[in-house]
Image (cartoon, rainbow, N blue to C red):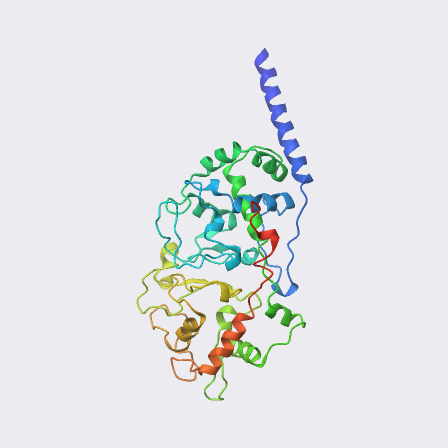
Length: 359
């Protein structure tokens, strides 16, 4: 006769705990992301992981926490440094075992508008993205359960998790959610280009010509000059949720998107990365092969390699100025690069909300 009472007691206890967690979570302060209207409202925030002040703050600590790695020396910030617009300045990064990553570390700017992550789009959502480097043997190299156990033993983290999730119990899922919340707040929208869009900055002649070249398609028949960059990097955020073969190799050394889809048409295709803060994020491309913006512009101007999966926007650059080449002059290249420098957001790389809280 005692067992039903025990079971009932357990159920009531569980309901009480869940109720307390729900109430506590409701007490967490909702955080509305701040971004300009011209960025658009097609943002991605899962229903089960809304932004809160407490969750974002916890995520900031976790982003810089070395205990999340197997050797207690590497954090997310190891490969994503704020002063470099959350890249690391290397072609390939080094993990806990000294192994180099397969691809270049991408900038973490304006992730709120992205659905599929990594160069090949393998992860759907920031929560899924965060799990990959944390648990990959050659990156941070530690199971989420181990990371949660290490944090549970610390003095500060149980309280931080309690504020964010309504319970001091630390789990791998909550680690991922907190990191994702923080990363969704990494919004870069105060470059001189943004100031130009808001009407508070007047570009130089070189910058203005660079803007025109960037957004214009060349036309030999009418002698219209252009670099045709906006096909892939159009819009204020300068990226698109698409994958393209941008003519790096006639025979791609890395299959790119095809490794995920298994489709030959995706061979050599990679994510269209943002150009925000591009002057700070060298080296460039998925394999970091170009060390300067000049080399990148030269590639698109005169070194596109033909292949079966080459982006339709780059096939012969028609109606281009010189067949398969854009034919930009040295002066036009400089003007185009002047515009790319306009995309640098100095406030983004110094914003204390994104900085290392342990310093």
